Image (cartoon, rainbow, N blue to C red):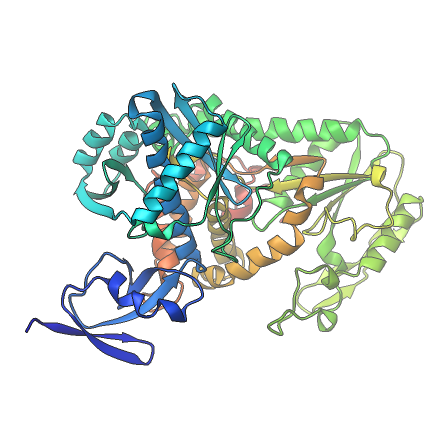
Length: 554
């Protein structure tokens, strides 16, 4: 009789033969889970389901409704899609398939080569994907040396991956294989194609969208609802990257090692400043505008952007005055509670909307108004003689998460408001098939800033991030398309600077902390980057809001 090992799952302990795949074990427990089990945590380590039992182990499950599991599902769908594109079009006809960014609930790709992108092509690609799903084809993983990986991807014509691995310090690279198709992916994979049941394909603009479930309903493909304005600003960011000849991490690292860092930073900052100036020009061209309303998700750089925009408004002949919507918080004891019984500072009910509208209407009418200041230490709104009266060229720059929601400023005429949506939409990808999620860039920004200014640990920042994102989904994203203009605050070089601040605080997270797996993922991600000295970052850069040393009053 062969060796057996004890497997503990919750309150259940059971013996399994040595060499049993985790995928076989979880089949017994799948009926008890609402979503598909796609990975396991074995003795504290994240493991793919093809891994086998080699010792006594305590298991917990990662499903497609968990953040890591959801990312794994989308990664598997991307591999499935790429394999189908090459199969249907013919390898000889495909020069490159590029994953650019997220659209709706999916990924936006373009295909270069001798391929006719039409509905017939998508029908055939989808049919082949579903055929592979039905066959439950194993997704194999093998580990090769970094040198071998570079040779392999040079042979495949995936030159961005070859360049990426030139800067890798690790000696081994994991390659995933689906039948004859091989690729590299940042992160774990499902163990076979049967997991990727839920997806759809749509032609959009010059490419195709692979639409997938969202994390809240992992077995439902939502309707494809593109956001035209957001797509436009994402396309603009891609063009900026191409203009600088830096589209991937390998490109960025190459530029850094050529000692072109200072010029690269100045160009990236100049592109942003030109955009800020053009927005100020748009505001100045609308004589009825008295309120510039700025909103965006956490760590977008709203405060620095507001001050840089104010400088440009001065240069365009206006007299801007900054107002933070946070100063209109209700007193702390009056803050609404969320479903868990905690104070919900991100809902509209946390703002004294009536007082805000009364003050803004009176300012619009030319009256002299005393503006409040919220004392975050005491949790009370205070009045300290801060009076304001708007003159002919005066304009208010109002910043806060509800700025785009007309319920906040319901009494103000529409033509008196100019709405700006700001977000850090990462234009840099790891390589042509591995994108950098916008949320990762913002999380790292916030982690660095909160550790520096608030003494908040990276562990605590990661723990509260899901709640922050829920608040964004409820209070910010639904209104983004109503903006008059969108501004992308991401800088193509920023992660090479942020890594030296983020890595030390991430290393503080211990293996038995619930946030450990996310910290480990982010550390692996940051390891792709060659670092940049902070000295070359301009003092008025949006990045200074997070790393410190800026010229603005934060």
